[in-house]
Length: 552
Image 1 (cartoon, helix red, strand yellow):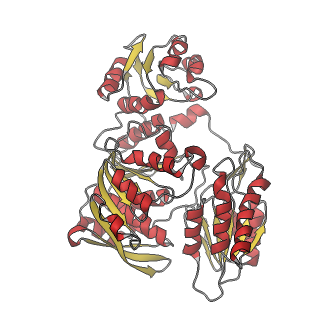
Image 2: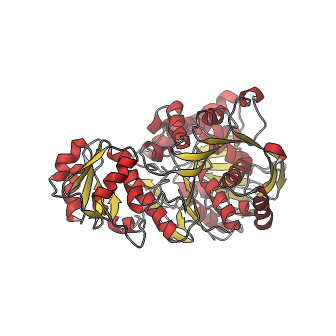
Image 3: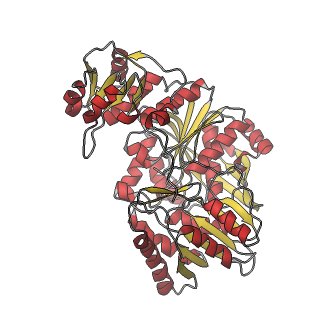
């Protein structure tokens, strides 16, 4: 087992900050909060100058406002003295923590909710809501990462300098910053935006998870354009129900948070999202309408994907919009779902104000929608075809299996996957059943067990697969192989040249969490090694991500 080498909390925090720290008096921050409609007061010296905001007392840098968030077991104000010792200049606290925060000897900015106020505080300090910096966000269960990569690639083809904030990496005009959450905490996000603005970035594209919305990580941010990919079962361990999951996503499209909402309306969840949005709405349909009548009352400008045609591993397609508008595009990534992701990215860029003619020239000249996305339908070998994908829920798994199914007579799809521990356990059996229905060979193995016993997780997935085989008379071959590296070797050993191997669930991730220990494990590296050992010719490892991440 190999442990990750984590940077010291203060060093990790510095990576998010702009080179030149801002300087603002608490009184000025107080006035900015009031202008945003947030009730606040300062207890102590209101002329104190602050230069940063931090949620973690261990990561506080000199001059910071330490945000004392109340937790389930303790209150952040209990760590105010430690924050003061690290150099904090002030404390942000609620009424319940104000007295304990004041005991540190630092001035206290008192608000009703620290979670709700910390984003606006950071925005006021860093000036990150500068209208000169474009901000686009993508939410949905699947496709967020790929859509942001498509959007930034298209923006670069248009001559813009771009920023990217997401699951795989954070990039400020070519400078890479380690990413540890799908969406960083609010103070880190606002610091990043300030850093990107200072670097001359024109537009930032970022993934917006439901966790980040619920936990106010995107507090104080206003998106010029936000996009919605889809909604399928995931994260019910946090939200409890699909309705609550939907409501979390829908908050991104409120009028005060997004100016324009580009929403995929391929199913009823998308149509509900379009109807509930307070922002200006643009709708996108990427599949034939399943209920034409249901779309008649949808608001806003309507676009649809037409003329999808296979080309290479990907597809050509057209986007048809109002007044006969047509855009022609191509994506080299496999799968019809990547046509949907690409179409959404195109319309989001269009919604930022880019004209159709300029957009068409960029699509024609640069093929920007063929950008490689680490661990997302990443082709590792051609014969046998071997693909690594992040699909980690039943809908994504079904789509991924369908995307890699070849056209050779007798060709099989061999899928290797597992389920994550300490997450929504209700999807495990469903994922097993989906794999059994759509793949020819199913190898159940470990994903990230976290604190759970791995065998119990595998058993739930296996039960779903075996029950589907028995109940539906399926011919799929189902087995259990662990650890994960051995499962990948087993898949390669049985693959014939015309077959396809899909290793699903982890994508770009390079560490596996087993009972709190991070074990080095990269599906792409393991797959390349197994293929080479079996005498095949895998692609080189160019462009692989090397940083640990955790999906939020």
